[in-house]
Length: 265
Ligand SMILES: Nc1ncnc2c1ncn2[C@@H]1O[C@H](COP(=O)(O)OP(=O)(O)O)[C@@H](O)[C@H]1O
Ligand SMILES: [Mg+2]
Image 1: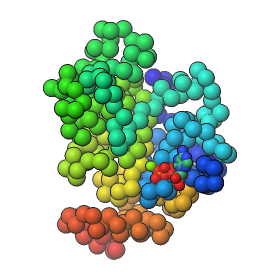
Image 2 (image 1 turned 180 degrees about the vertical axis):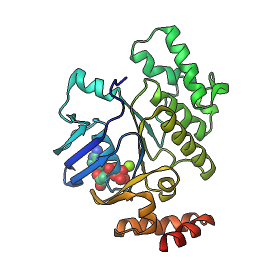
Image 3 (image 1 turned 90 degrees about the vertical axis):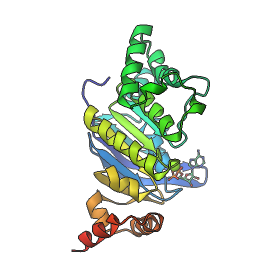
Image 4 (image 1 turned 90 degrees about the horizontal axis):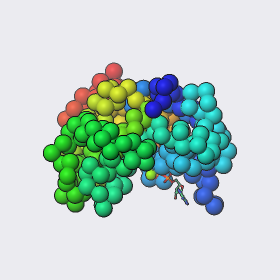
């Protein structure tokens, strides 16, 4: 657990290539602490690459990553592992272990951290409660719905009290109703635990429902960034307009019209 609380994440001049493919180009981004920050972009925009660099799973070819004032992209060994213990991650495909039941999956990071059996049991119970799946504690994964699996993944990600939760398309495999329940859980947890949430998605609807600020990624660069309100009222980049346009086709719920006319005034 970090004694310092969540920190501002600063990326400066980040570039990353895979062979001849350029994933990120000279990218600058500051992610405020203790809020839900959205990163949106089309498929291939560089979102997952950016997330892997931010979470120190990969090193950039050039540029720097800072947590607070500490440069972290150059960390190795024990210092790197210590930093990474402060991050939780959830994905579209849940990445859970089929060989373990619900409690076993949530217990895994606690076992790695070397907690005693008794402490693990207590913490798992707390986490089951936190994500509201206590009745599934002994269930096998195949008995769970997508939403329940994502709750297990969230509990596992938060097990060791990270200061940052990274979400990569965490609701993209879920139906709209389940998406809403997972997003409201993420919002509730962000407030309750005062963590930083970095939420990556290609869906504007996700950004609109829970993010405060957002960066639009396009071709490995930040096309624009600002408050979610401004983005919806007055998208400046072509990438943002295209994403908004796509999203309008996907969801014709009535309240969007209100949002749009509100923004036009
Ligand atoms: N490990 C990798 N090897 C080769 N190319 C990659 C790898 N990871 C990402 N890319 C390429 O980098 C670009 C950005 O990918 P990615 O970050 O996954 O985008 P997004 O998550 O926005 O869909 C794409 O062109 C993708 O094909
Ligand atoms: Mg991706």
